Image 1: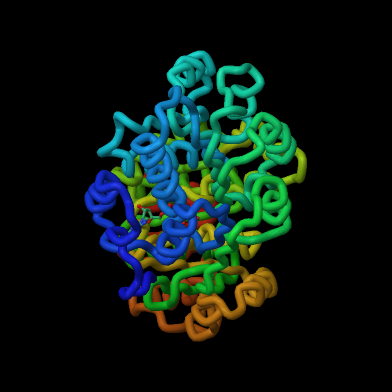
Image 2: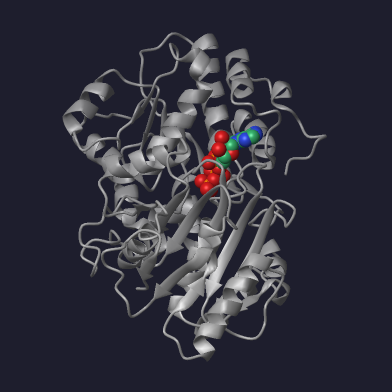
Length: 477
Ligand SMILES: Nc1ncnc2c1ncn2[C@@H]1O[C@H](COP(=O)(O)OP(=O)(O)OP(=O)(O)O)[C@@H](O)[C@H]1O
């Protein structure tokens, strides 16, 4: 959280039109990364910035980019209209989101600054038409931008002044290494560059060497996730896969998870299975993954943000297909043939007002945990992460905890918060949950193949429940 004594937006020498837009967004003060990055960027420094997910990195580069371009237009010599800012992001959703944020910040100077997203459609003809008007800022994925550079519908060699690489740690792992290297050959020798990332890894280091010149490194000494006062984290040990379905059902049906939630699973198949399971009990959800066409993904995110759905079942970038260096991920991998290589659900997407992230399946890596958790408790909002873990997965969760050691996750994912379903320990959970578990255990003890759940519901793994899909009986996957 930002220091109340910190430099406010009004003291950064920003154009009044930008200040007005910031005020309209309801931002009373900059986040920590914005407070540190904006003044340095305005001084003309190259930046390598690491700040935790959800900390407002987009505006940390968008505000100085807009300010520098506005200042140039107002005070510099009159020159031909040209593309002067380029923002590269790893996915199409992020391109859409970054453009939308830049446009909101440029709301009061829309006549002076035009922003185009070249990853918005599959139709390069319409993009070429947009590029012919030479927008001030172009946003896109490296492959789409390179495509336009190679076709000469975008020329940056003489005009580019500002380059941003957002979610930099993903750009290489999404297979954009070759495209990025080719793209850099189309840029001028001198430009100011910002590299934004939630994590620093060897890919970020490699990118730093490729694009930055004597950068200032901002490695904020904050934990990768918000503290326990803002983000509460729990784990539940479930004895079997079935227990996970039962527990989720109980949590949702008994409204123990309130507000909007994101449910993360590790495979596409699981996401559809979970959706079917919840549908049987009239719990509406929608599925979001890289197999869906871009317009559907954007529609789902926008509907979720507008409150049409309370639950989205998502697979995240890391599990849609393990990132392979030098190769575009996802393509051709089993079970994910049609997936869009430029789609990533967990990373960077600004789902609005998510009160809970539920790791139905254990995240495969600590990074995946952080990025899933980062969909809640964004900016200064509160949030909760609940992770279901099977006994066999506990060592893996231990590794995640270890790698997050010193972070808030380590404290919060402690045994004090552990509840064991169908086992002996039961942590600080609500009474309703405990009752569900007691009845379930009773059913198991009596050798019954069903679990009696709250609200008089019977869920049977053997009974397909056909003919009564809603409310009464349902089938466990
Ligand atoms: N100064 C601010 N005050 C309040 N809210 C803010 C501020 N700056 C940004 N936000 C909001 O915080 C949310 C997260 O911002 P943003 O998406 O830029 O974060 P991020 O650091 O890029 O996250 P990620 O790494 O997940 O992409 C957005 O909804 C944004 O509108």
